[in-house]
Image 1 (spheres, rainbow, N blue to C red):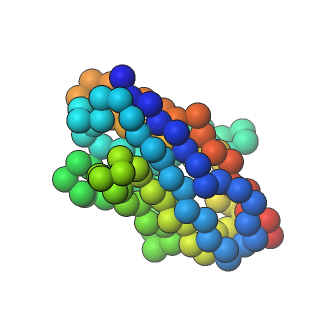
Image 2 (cartoon, rainbow, N blue to C red):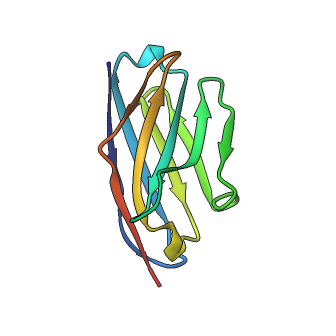
Length: 115
């Protein structure tokens, strides 16, 4: 099993920045990719950004150029640097870890961007 704990959410004004962290523990050797997803009230959960074990990344069009996903393998931690935040970025952000036939989710962290 893999345990994921997110941190770093909060309230920020439009144009501001936040950095989310996701600490992974457990069977982390079996993780093939990790990512950040978000879910706004009344909407479906959507992909924000993903990074593979080889370092390849992909982003939702809505966050390209503003968000950066990265990881520190020594600390078993995934990050999401969010710049130029917009009110429409308000959501609960979830960390995800996936293997060959499974995936795990963190508990989520709230990000609120005020206009």
